Length: 261
Length: 374
Ligand SMILES: Cc1ncc(C[n+]2csc(CCOP(=O)(O)OP(=O)(O)O)c2C)c(N)n1
Ligand code: SF4
Image 1 (tube, rainbow over the protein chains, first blue to last red):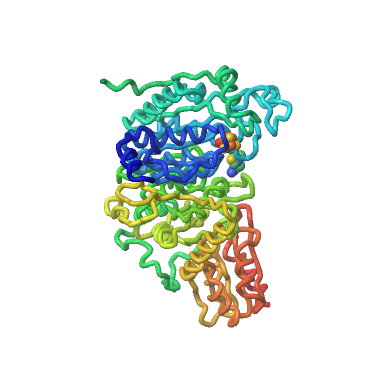
Image 2: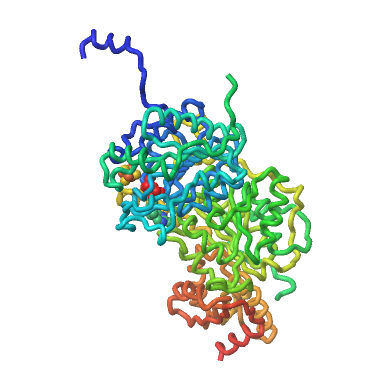
C-alpha cells in the first residue's frame, strides 16, 4: 500500500465492524443459514448493554454447538436440550451474571421441552434465543417438533402427517400462559426491517433479565436451506410465505415496557 | 449391629480431616447427617428431585440453605438437577445433589458431561432396590453404576461409602475436597438403612457451620470480569487426536486420584478368614465377625471406604496371609468382581449377597463364614 493510500484509510470513518463480543473465527455455517445472523445480533446486544465481563452463554447441541468458539464471553457447552437447567444454576448462584442460552428447535422444543417449560414457569432470570428452523440441521434433516405439516424431512419422507406425528408446536403460544415469562416474541429473519424488530425484541428479552422481571425469550424464524433443500433466497421466501402462517410473528408477553426517553 | 465400635484403623488419606471436629454428640439420622455434612463441607448450592428414601436431605436443606445465604432449588427432574450441577460447578461453586437409584440413573448423561468437562461436584446416592422401580428398601446394587461408569465414555468418579452416622456427616465434606482437588465428580454411596438409622454422632449446630471456603478456580466460567481470556466449560473435541489427548489428560488425573484409596480393617492381625464388605453390609459383617471371635474363630473385617479407587493392593497383600475371603453385599455380586481381580486367585473368594431389600442378620453371615471354614 502506498503512503497516500494509508492516509486515505485513516481518514475514513468505520461504520461497520465485527462486534467486540465475537471472536475473529469464521463461522462454519452453510450459505444462507441464519445462525450466523443471530450470532451477530446476540454479540451486538452484549456490546450494546456492555455485558461482556458478566456474561455466561450456554450453547446447545445442534448446528450451533461450536458457538463457544465464536464468542468472547465465558461459555458453557450444555448437553442436548438442557441449556435452560444449566443457565438456571449459573444465574441463581450469582444473580449479577447475565446468562443467555441459544437453542435450536430440536434442542429446546423436543428433548429439552421440560427444561424450557420449567425455567419459564419458575421465571428464571435468563434470556433464551430460540432458533426455529423447523428441522434438525446438525443430524441431517430429520423431522422436528416444529416441522410444518406436509414438509418433507428425512424421517417424514412423504411429508409430515399430522395424524401420525401431531402438529407443529408453537413455543411462544405454549409459554405465554406461564407467569414466570416476562418477555416473549417471535420474529422472522427475512429482511432488514425484520432484523430491526429482532433487535427490539432482544433488547426487551435482555431487559427482562437485567431488570429482574422474569424469563425472556425471542423465537427467530430461521432458515436451513441445506436440509430444506432450497436455495437461500427461496428459503427466505418460504418463511415469509408459509412459515409465518403457522408461526405468526409478534409479541406474546411484554412485562418489560418501554424505556422512558 | 454393633452397639459401639472400636476405633477405626483407617488407612491415612491425603484428605486433611473429614470435617471440622466442632459439635456435640447427639442422636442423628443418617440423611440428616449427610445434609449437615454437606453444609459443613462448604456446599454452596443444592439441586434435587424428591425420591424415597433420601427425602430428608432436600427437605432439611430447603430450610437451612436460604438461611445461610446458599442456593437450594427443587428441580423438575433428576435430568435437570444434574445439569444444574453442571452449570453451578462450571461457575466454580461447590454443588451437590442427592437422590436414590432410579434418580441417579436419570443423571448418568449429565454426569458424563460433568466428568468430560473436568468439573467437580458431589452426588449422594441413598441406594434402594432395583432394577427398575424396584422398591424403597436398602440395597447396594448401584456399585457398578457408581464405580464402573453408568454414563458413556471413559470416566471415573471417586466413590465414598460411609458405614455409620459419623461418616455420613464427614464424607460429604471429604467428597467436596476430593472433587475440587481432582476436578472430578465424587459419589457418597449409601443406602436406605444408613439413611434412616438414628445413631450417635458428633455434629455441629447450624450456627457453628463455617462459611464455604473461598477457592481460586481460574478455569471457572464466572463471567470474564477482568480476566484477559474467556473460559469455556466443554466436553466436545471433534478432532479425534484432540479427544484422545483429552482422554489421556483425564486418565492422568484419575491415576493421581488412586492415592486417595481408603479402607478400614478389624482383627486382621491374626485373621485366617476375612469378611470384605462396604457400607451397611460392613456393619452387619462386623457384627458377624465379633460373634465368630467370641467363639474363638480367627475372622477379620476388610471394609473398603473408597470403592473407587478400590483398595486392591491392600487386598492383594491380605490374600497372601489368609485362607479365604467372603465378600458380603446387598446385591447379586458386584464388588466381589473387584475383590477377585485384586486377589487374583491367591486365596479363595466367595460371595454372599441378597438383593431386593432383605437385610441378612449377622448370624446369616457368620453361618456362611463357618461353612467356608470347614
Ligand atoms: C442425547 C442426545 N440425543 C441426540 C443427539 C443428536 N443430536 C444432535 S443435534 C440434534 C438436533 C439438532 O436440531 P436443532 O436443535 O433443531 O438444531 P439445528 O441443528 O437445526 O440448529 C440431535 C438430535 C445428541 N447430541 N444428544
Ligand atoms: S444444516 Fe441448516 S442449520 Fe445447520 S448450518 Fe447448515 S443451514 Fe444452518
